[in-house]
Image (cartoon, rainbow, N blue to C red; front, side, top):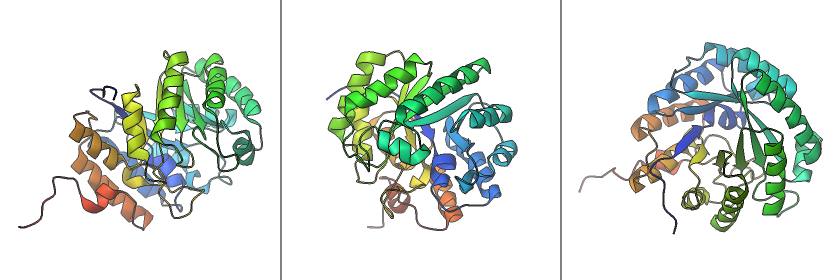
Length: 304
């Protein structure tokens, strides 16, 4: 077993990735969610995405949400963009940390954006330069890093080839997305080891889904192999588009609950986070999948 880090950094993706996969909710509710999260101690938040409203109507009000949200001075906020136009919108709105997605699976990439993986990497190269010229940074998220709903297996070598191109073109950070919730600890260890052997100087993050119940095990394994940054979504907001009814993003409170009990600091107040998870559950109008939200933390007792 590897050594656990003393501290990890969590990026809260509920306001963007979570709500993007739910039925549209009112703008006021999105703003309030963004305003509540910094009070939990979270210091990184993915706030919105600047996509065409016809493609993702849940994010049609991105500019308004961001303009109205209170910006906590100690929080790093980021926005997802699909292309140069989206990057221009994000920069105009005041974002300096941007993200773009490319699929390691060529089939998945074509299904998503009607372009090959290589073509999307060409697009990213152009956006990187624009973002850097504006004084910002760009994270490249490699989706289907552990498997594809169309192709099945995605070799680690293929994922690392995509990373190699993105880093060569100037990507400031890399994230690995378990798009369909198929990652398992052995696959996580292989990818993290392969990445650190070739790109140790470029920060990286992992984004796990709990679709098949392996998210926490994957996080533990990733930490043992050197990872210290993870995405998570309050309440487990956001389902898995390839498995209707199944869990999607790992719940932030589940990650905090596990790590803090292990002695790994997150800087997050679990009770405050659970309050925000309850609010998020009320906003979307259905039960969220978080087990800690349902059962409470391990310190909960019942009368003897």
